[in-house]
Length: 177
Image (cartoon, rainbow, N blue to C red):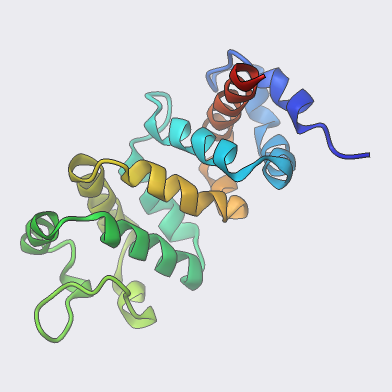
């Protein structure tokens, strides 16, 4: 018999992350993430990133970068950098946030090497993500789509963020029924 992720999500309907479900959210999230359609999971993650009940988007991305392995970090940075316009890259470059990602020609590489990634701090990544959120519409959704492929990493955000994601997913299922 298949896992009834819809039934589990019903516990989060109307939830905001401040209810008692946050204590169980990590376990529930992993169960749901294994069965949920990717788009539903992406929408839930986007809601958690945009919520006023979670830390700012940039801070969460910085935290996820700090908790990620080198492959995940590479994917995160490639996704973030690809979302930036040349003007946004220039502004970040002048602030020093991208100095560790400068190539030999003085341009920012969108595919950082492992050596370049090792020089980035979670705070620098948070600064880059915050700038991207302000100047690149859709970056939250792009990053959410990336993170939907790395659910083990998302669990490191904690129960409140996961409960918000699952509440959004439950509402999405309810509205599509």
